[in-house]
Length: 96
Image 1 (cartoon, rainbow, N blue to C red):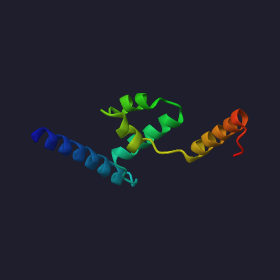
Image 2 (cartoon, one colour):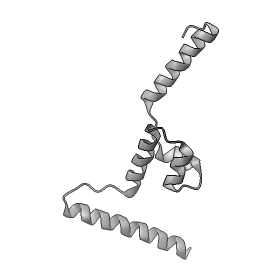
Image 3 (tube, rainbow, N blue to C red):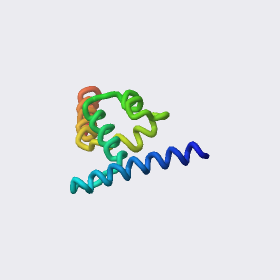
Image 4 (tube, rainbow, N blue to C red):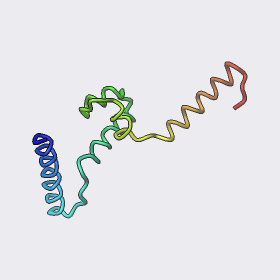
């Protein structure tokens, strides 16, 4: 329990340090998790494998990476469905 408390204290202290620096620079404070989430999403958009993103973000389980750090790209999802529909049309003659 003591180690967990020290870890939480260290994270809070880091966030407070960044918040103070941002206020001195008249900037908006963003917690470190916002930068990590953006990094995970940008790496995914660049085509980096989810297991590699997991390793970069140092998550124990890839499901954490997928659930919280890789935001869905709706344009890519629509394009993928459209492509799948074209394959079904050509291969099976299904009208989509």
